[in-house]
Length: 406
Length: 146
Figure (cartoon, helix red, strand yellow):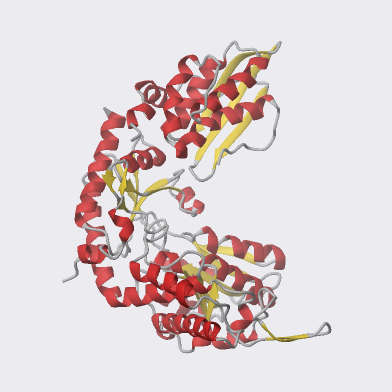
């Protein structure tokens, strides 16, 4: 039986108090807390074998390189990718998407081509494509959604044309919690010869993925939403695509030979990893993946589903509360608004009760526009949250309403 | 520990529920927009300034309780003020919500002093004031305090 209280001990930060009350951390969709295993792994690296990688012949550099490449292999296994060189380290999901847009995109798109994204994308999966469209003259099209936050799949066939070069879609919506039918989208996109980038930033801590069976061309995620460090993320790309793509940034590590006349680029993945990478971050992410696997992603998902179900049922009983995002398939996110009370006021009052949630547009302004809202309040769950914390959330919401509506 | 009641005083709830000077202002000769994209607070401020005196101030938009109440209280405080006084009032208000000493007489605006205990909300309280500043200086870009 999965017991979140057991795992909570691995997260020292959860013991702290906020405004004199025990912290209830429900802003996991923004970033998750870090377990001791991750903190220890980074510290161990700095204390025992801090060195630059892929360079020195000395022992420390060898050990650091092994740990860094070991983390890459852990990520490959976690994503179920066929080849380790398909795993590129980036600063995060955002940089990974920009990398694809600026390298693959600039060499594969021309005026009149189309990029198809969904109505519930994070800004990180909108703006890089808009920038690419400006550069190439390509057009951005959008798969619409309904009032529940479910993509209108019957529109996809109409929106996909022979000019569609790329489909960018999020696996889990960070603003609504919707789990999207990416397998179906990939199949339809491939049928017209389009490539597919799946934004897994919000998904990887909740949904198991396998690159081989999923079949997407690119997949991106950030370490810090998977109990790992900030500043480290991953681009997965199919080997043949990555090999054919031009490099992203130029510099050390991404070259084989440099003369003033000509430079020969390194092979993948190094071709896309110019400069000294975030070594401790990569090692920390490897430790985070070990941690998640030891807990079991299926256990985590089942536990979070129970929390979400409880929270949803409680929310439905609160007068004046409207849940934003009511798709049948959701992961770990409860977005809501309270009648007559701005989400920022909710956020401040909840914080005063020790409950940390997010209020704002969640970097998904088109989603807010769709629901005609300036912002929502969002509670998002992780493996260490408990049913008692869901109770604390709703006690705090009651306090908000008392304060505002009395 | 900061007390919520210092922030959410009755006067603030009252101005949030029933904002004063809310709506369009025909014949306005000063205008500016304020927009805090992260919060989603939007504010449109219109002024009628004649002979260096603010005759009328009205606002429209939507925002949190703090930004709405602040805009409402500000428009009340502005009526009949000389344009030249506004800079001092702006400065005093700023210092007050940041918890710094100030010498300007704040009147009813003093109910917003509790904001200083909530640093994340200073931008909410000051949005209206920065928009005012922009209106008086005829800026054509929307203002943000984020």
